[in-house]
Image (cartoon, rainbow, N blue to C red):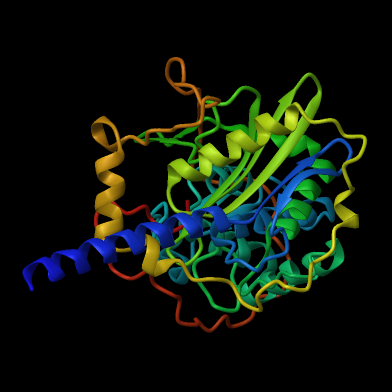
Amino acid sequence: MGKWHISRRLLAGLLATVAATAAAKAGPSIVVDLNTGRVLEQEDAFRPWYPASLTKLMTTYVTFRAIKAGEITLESPVRISERASKEPPSKMGYKPGTVLSVDNAIKILMVKSANDVATSVAESVAGTRQAFVARMNGEALRLGMSGTRFVNPHGLHAEEQHSNAHDLAILAMALRNEFPEYSKYYSIEALDTGKTVMENTNDLIRRFNGADGMKTGYTCPSGFNLVATATRNGRTLMAVVIGELTIETRADKAADLLERGFSQPLDSAPFIGQLRPTGAEPSAPVNLRSVICTEEAWKTVAESRGPEGKPVFHSPHIKAPAGEPVTMAISLGATGPESTAPRYADVPIPTPRPDNAPESAVAEGG
C-alpha cells in the first residue's frame, strides 16, 4: 500500500510535468519582418489569449495618437489619482496627486510596466478610464485587430480582456511604423529615479544581438509574454511570444525565433494581412494560473535559477550582458498643456487583484 501511495505521487508529478511541457509548447507565437510585413513563422497566431501587460502597448499607441492629434504633448501632465495609486504591483507607488510628464510615464510603462502609471495615463489623456478604454477598442477595430477586446489600460487579469499573437503583432507594427520617432522608448536599458535603478524587464535587451525592443507582460492566467524586436543590417524582425511558463522560456523562445528568422528568405513568406484563422481556435483563452502560480511551480523555478535568483537562459543566442546598463533619468513634474478631454465621475470598478503568491513570484505586470 505504501508503494502505491509513492507511485501515485510520482505519477501525479509526472503528469504535472507533462501538462506544463504541453502548455509551454502550445504557447502561440509569430515572427514578422517589420520592413515588409511578411510572416516568417507562426504557431496558433489567432488563438485567444490574455495579453497581460502587452496591453500597455495599446495604452502607449492611444497616447501617441493623442499627441499626433494635438490633444497633449510629451510634456503634458499625468496625474496619479487615488484610484490609480491603489492598483496592485507592478507599480511605482506614487502618492495621489503626484505629477509626471507623459514622456516619463511612457518610459515607466515600457521599462517597469507600472499599473498605477498606466491607469493615470488613461485618466489624464481621456478624462476617465472608461473613455480611454473606448479609444483602445476603437483603435483595435481600426487596425484590424478583430480578435481583441480591452476592458482596462494596464493588463491586470480580466476575463473579458483578450487578444492573440496576430493582433499583438499588428499593434506592435503600428507602433514601430507609424511612430518611428518614438522607437527610443522600447530599447531603454534602465531607468534611474535618483533613488533606485530599474532595469528593463525585456531580457533580450543587452543580451541578444541587435535587440531594440519592445515589451513584456505577465499575469498568472496569461503566463509570460514578450514582444521582442531586433535589427541587423537594416532589417528589423519582431517576435510575439505568449503563454510561456517562466521568464526564461519566454526569452529563450523569442531569441530562437528571431535568430531563425534572420536566416530565412522573404520571397515565399505570406504578408500578415493574408493570414486567416483556421476556424479550429478555442472560443476562450486558457487560464494558466493552476500551472504557473503554485508553491510547487515557484519552488521549481527558484531551484533552477542561478545565484541571487537570477534567471538562467538556455538559448545559445542569449549572452551575458557586458558591463552595467545605460540608465536614463526620470523625474517628477510636467510643463506641458493638460488634456482638455471632458472629466466625468469615474466611479471605481473593483480592480482584479492577484491571488496571494509566494515572495519569489513576479509582480503581475512585467
